[in-house]
Image 1 (cartoon, one colour):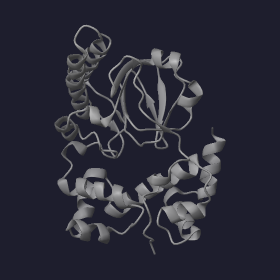
Image 2 (cartoon, helix red, strand yellow):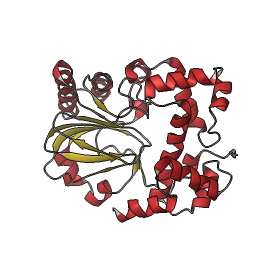
Image 3 (cartoon, one colour):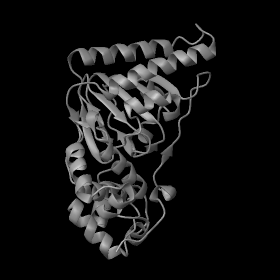
Image 4 (cartoon, helix red, strand yellow):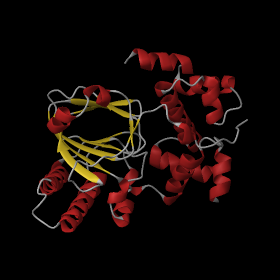
Length: 302
C-alpha cells in the first residue's frame, strides 16, 4: 500500500540549503572563480559538510586531484574532468588542497530558455562527471576561458551589455558541457538521444515518487503501456521503470536519513509508505542496509 503524501522536498529543512549569492558589485545569477579563490573565501568545514545548493556547479579541474560527492556517490576527478552538479542535489567537497580548477556557479534562470532546453539543464539524472576528450575537451576549455575572462572584465562595457555577453558565453559553455564527448560517470552515458517517452516518465517520477511507486500509475497518467515505459527507461537509464522509481525513492530516503534527525516512521510517511516496517523492508532490499544502520554509517564516516 502506498499513501498519497506531500512532496517530501517541501519539508527538507534538515538538509542545509544554500542559496545563490552574487559577490558585491557583480551581476546576479552567475559567478566564475577559481578553486584557489574558493579556498580563500569559503568555510572549508561548510564545503566539506553535505549541503543542497539551489544553483548549478560547473567545475573543470586543471591540476591535482579532487573527490566530490554528489547524492552519496563519490567522484574522483583528475585533470581535464568536468563536474556538473545541479540544483537540489546534495553534495560536498573533499580536500581542496592542491586541486586547481575553474568553477562556474549559475542559477537556472540566468540561461535563456532555448539554451536551457537544448542543454537539458534541468536533467537531475544526468551524469555528474564527464571525461571530455580531443577537440571537444579543447572547445570546452576555450569556452570556459572566455567566460572567465569576461567575468573579470567588469567595467569594460556598460553593465547591461556585460550581463548579456556573460549570458551568451554561459550558453556556449553549458551547451559544450552537455555534449562534451568522452565517457561519463553514471548510468545515463547515452542520454543525448533519450526518447520523449523516457523524458516524460522521468519528469513524472520526479513529481510523484512520494505518491506512487507503481509503473502502472505512471503509464496510465502518461498514456503509455507499462512495457513501453520499461523499454524506454531501460534504453536511456539502463534499468527498468520500476527500478528507476525505486532508486529515486531510495535517494530521497538517504538524503533524509543522512542529514536530519527524523525517525524512520516520519520518513516513511513522507515517502508514501503505510508504516515504518514497510519502509525499512523496502530500504534494506534496495540499499542492502537498514535505514538506521545507513544513518549511523554515514554520520560515523563524517
